[in-house]
Amino acid sequence: MLDDVPLEFRRQGALLSTDRRLLNVDAVLAMLRATHWAGSMERAVLARAIGNSLCIGVYVDGRIIAFARAVTDLATYAYLTDVVVDEAHRKNGYGSWMIEAFLTHPDLQGVRRIALLTRDARLLYERFGFSVGVTTSSTYMELWPPAVPAATHQE
Picture 1 (cartoon, helix red, strand yellow):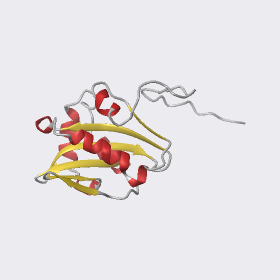
Picture 2 (cartoon, one colour):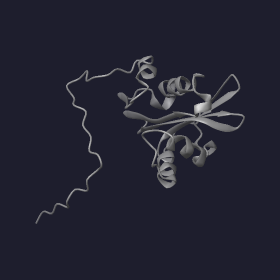
Picture 3 (spheres, rainbow, N blue to C red):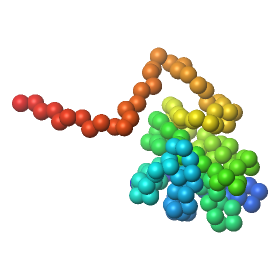
Picture 4 (cartoon, rainbow, N blue to C red):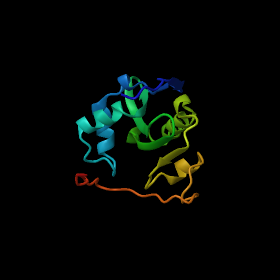
């Protein structure tokens, strides 16, 4: 289980919290299943991901209306993913509020890189300084779906 510092903030009747104990996995799963990237997400997978990620939930009247998580070691790297706002609550700044909370979170200060992939929210992330393209000599690579390497034996 990730050992992060839970934080809470209030804004215009909404609560933003990083306390994973407040998360309703089924409600988060319903929001994620409506997205193009997590439509087939399984409950057990999401529960495991939540337990091992820095998570943010936004709540209105005790009901979760937005969610995001960062896959991170809290020291060197963070990958923002699963950023979703319930359709009825979009265009109210909740996505921006969650990104702002990640970028100012005490446990993420000093990480070397925060990364993300987006298909349709580029402008949101650019407002916070995220950029497209490689700015170093590194090459972004991925293995998808992960292959299981053959066992190696030395005799």
